[in-house]
Length: 164
Image 1 (tube, rainbow, N blue to C red):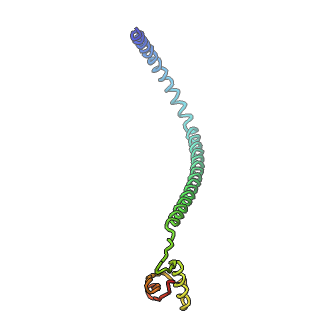
Image 2 (tube, rainbow, N blue to C red; image 1 turned 90 degrees about the vertical axis):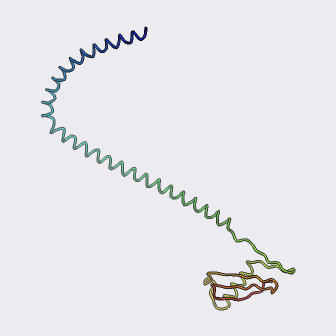
Image 3 (tube, rainbow, N blue to C red; image 1 turned 120 degrees about the vertical axis):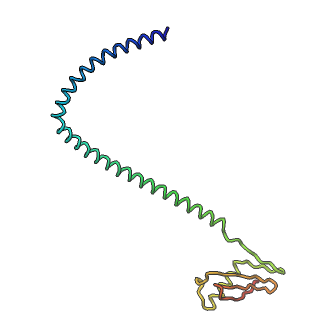
């Protein structure tokens, strides 16, 4: 029953629409004539108004772009600071993880630390007339049976220090 009522309503609406369409066509023709006359009169004024509106919209767009650009730059600076902070933290963690181990040499009741041996080598190198800052590479060879540490600095200076 609801379908029948809906169909009937559709048919009535279609008939009214056809009548309205005929009336609309006649009205449209009259409007078209008035419109053509009005357009001819208003067209130059409208062009000027549209040009003014375009200039206003362009100015507003420029301001929006400037504001947006500034916001993007600020956000980029924020992100850069966060990334730099994170990188610094990670580098610190890696450095802490890669800390120099303490190495000890023990032989027949004697003991020496590798850090102490390294300092002895540097001290002897400086006493020979060199600068400690000139050291680019340092190779240390431990020989406990001789109670000695042999070294080579920068692949051309060598020497010997006592372990204990």
